Image (cartoon, rainbow, N blue to C red):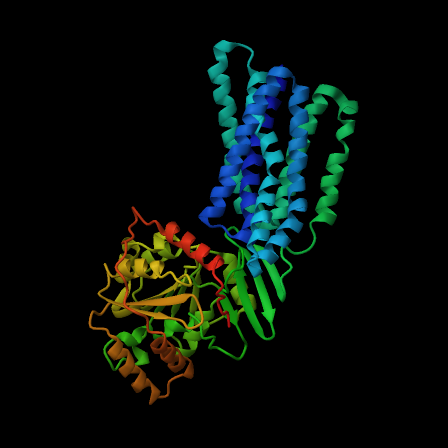
Length: 520
């Protein structure tokens, strides 16, 4: 009797582990197409909670009608098996969604998103039956009901804890999302089959013997191919943070992350100017009092290094100047070295969260670039007064912060909110809009006397010196894109930074507009 109860608790543990692993693997499955914004997470968490709620109710009903281990393990056999079917059934739907998202065919996209989420209703609901059914089987005396219920809840929660970290930190980066589904499917299926075998013997589990064979065949035949049919794809992988693609178009290479809306890095073996936000970092010091020679730039920090586009440009304009590049995803750093020419003697690539890394840096910088914003993925902790105070503390006397900010076709609220917040720390704030894009760049100088007039004077001086054309062209672009004055908006703090309200609106504005951003 005790051995049966022990195995029952083992089953509860693995069921909890599988449930949370499925939830996080689901986020990665959808993140490849729809990203990992709060909207996507809210849909995933909300629907899975609904499925678990249905499972709790259904498990209690089934336990009352048929309180036997045989019924319990049969339910979990099907739970384990259907977990393994999710990635196979999801792949064609995800590919359809990927094409729809790339072309912004919204009815197809929303339909596919809903269809993928519906895939989880059966496995998660069946997994949800575990706790109430196990409580019914384990409870022999109502006087110990509290202790038994607490034990089952604790074991299930411990399993969920293991499933969370095992999937996110080990399996997804190591073998990918699809294999993660299959591994947890196989584990849950075997646990349930062993439990069923203990009750009915070999003949009793024979009708289910085909299930492990199907999972094995899926692992060999069904999971091949790429997650997206993307033109020019030369490499894809998953990390603990992102779904990553490297695309090739002619001699250009592009870095795309998650749903792939926007290019995070660009590379060409001969060309360095891409007329985008990357080169605008280079012009930051020249808002300071003229003349401001290039030699006064002694150290640079880049929060949001990505695959090193700006670092490569900075190494040309400011040769031998040390660059500390903070990038939270170490896999992106590896890809930068392999595909984007990021092996620069002056670059120190640091795999850390940008705010943490900058706060604990021992250096002052003449340029601090913040390029970690891409609606709807804006880390709120890098938008607050407290964060910008950290930046200010690590700037030299004439140091300048530069931030790449996304905006909507007709929506400057994010630019205004960040500019207003930055203005609480810096008194000299300047904005330019990059032509033919939805990007603005905000500059903030530690020197209050910085001005547009000084910027123009510095450009005149640099044009008569031996200045790299990349810098001169970037400065001309800055002047061309000089933006209107900022409007006063809400100040973001560590306590209150409702960044999601703005970014969600920007995304919807972009989706339902007829304008398309140029990525050239």
